[in-house]
Length: 256
Image (cartoon, rainbow, N blue to C red; front, side):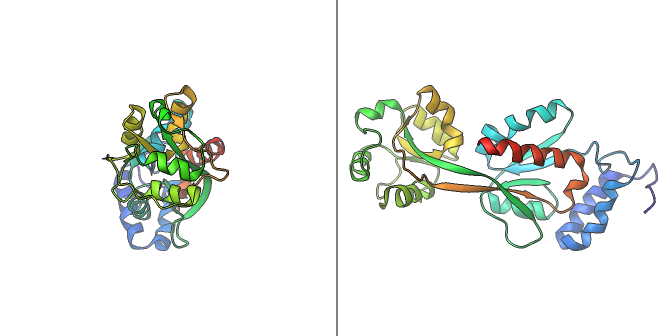
């Protein structure tokens, strides 16, 4: 393939590549060669193209962006989006993102993924509730005590809390939520202020536990886990910055 003429609009080529991928990932693979043109400049050269990455908003704020800060200082450009796993994976397939942190393994073979980390869930409340709920008591006693404590969650069907009750306590969660908020960061804010208790990802509230602003109410031998997957768009590694971001996230995830 010959080098593109200097007047070529590489932004249009990138757009075309994304649209083409949405129709056929396999057929789009020869087009990814545009990003590797020797001596190329601009968005497809592999040197100035920003890395488009996405994932859950809470994980981005607490873990991902701090881990990538050194790369930004070295010149890597990032374009970060947040959202739920299924929509983000569809956007990845259409070429909108280069890397996505997903809360489940993607279906099919078109997308490559590695499980960089397991997210641990913890049962927490502000210290003022420990007068009513003694931490680390037997499951029956703990569940009974928590019936009189407000439950804070991000969804009416209590997906995280119900799973914790089932797997860590061997019980069914019956009390309804006292407070529902839009996301896990808002849950953390409400619980930290003393609104009640909740089940949260350990990565999100570890700093609050370390400082004593939150109390761990239960320490099961095998806490519920959610495996995170780092998913890469086919052909994205023609951009060297994508490789640097991917490798940095895999390294940082060892300590999450």
